[in-house]
Length: 406
Image (cartoon, rainbow, N blue to C red; front, side, top):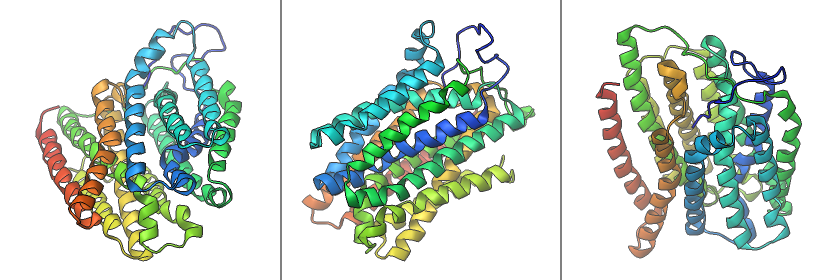
């Protein structure tokens, strides 16, 4: 949910309403912040597997808690910082959240108990749920047209590439001491404070949409936005099933231990590539079939991840999965900006849908794992069956939303 500035700009040190903060500074905060929070949210399951012997059920349970905590924070971000507007600037809030997330990374390092990881995940998710809406408001604040689309592209590529890099850097630390991963992340988050003085005291108002459209074009874009938002829910559901299971999936596929986190980052790399490709071409804009193709690509990749029996088949499936995820995300953001930039990730309804994916995916995964154990069925078959039931349901919702008037 984007946080819009409600404070009158005073003084020369504050960002004027018509100007955005320097994109390089916002990009640096995005990249470093994603390097840490991405590894903390997506990579924590490798840490818990190695340090505490967590299996699929335990990691999925932890993922449910992470999702619920993140959603609760994201839904309250606007109200929290709106009430603090007179006493705390957006820049000050970003600094405090970075410091808090950095400090929390050291809790499991100092208290090496499974309970500390759960505490860390809950608090870190809450702080992240407040942090990213603020960062997003700096990305789009004061920008319009080409500058707004370029800033969004830089933001997407920055956070997605950082998450992939974090998985590469985790591998040697996991072999040395799994909890040292969190200590390194804490150090990066604290170092990110260096860039805080370069952004404005408050995020500027969002820019206008990228282009002027006719009424018929706007109607089409609204329908495509509704469809992409539903597909975005599906993407978060599927992603939050796969992420906690990655340690088990790469092991089952026969990937050797020394490169497992690097191998698991395949879907993150393909997501970055798709972000760059979609940023560089506009041929998919306004194409009715494009969201359907993106969704099919994502579902096929997901099914392949669950059923993969070799490193090659898993790598291909992860690449397809990441590509579909990236395409759906980029399309959803693009149409939100074009229909009306003030609505980008704004409003409790949109965040609640994203939250459904964050928390609902691991719940589906838990049900599948439990079903496989109690019914003596293969886990992959059970999970794939449940996932396709979910996909059919969301596809119907997406179709109905696409046909509905904006």
